[in-house]
Length: 148
Image (cartoon, rainbow, N blue to C red; front, side, top):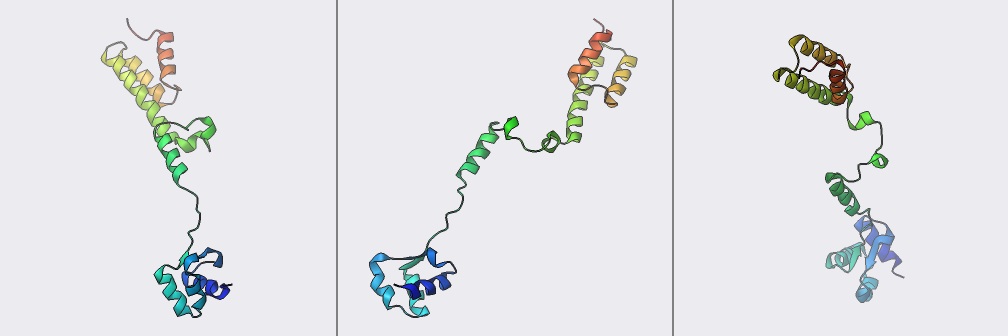
């Protein structure tokens, strides 16, 4: 029943026959429509409509993005790829060397270290000797380089 009309409507609407929807109250009008022109007029009147496809909702994607902006869902279990994929090595180096240089300069400005000691620490940090700021502080305190 109404197979021809459904096929014609699908051609006009550029969709599959399963997506064609008929207004159940106007089935008699649809039965009388036997040409493409008749079906087209019914589509324009809203008697025959195209059912929307059910796509993946964006709700959870937006929700996750909002949570991540707050710093949630960023633990080890949520990460994919290497550490260097999330923080490139050069950026990591820049962050580390800046901290170390600021610390060494603050020691020099407070006159807690002499110029030769400053130069030694600067060159060691430039060469990548210190893993991080804590390692640098430990090195300075163990060697007794800081004047009190």
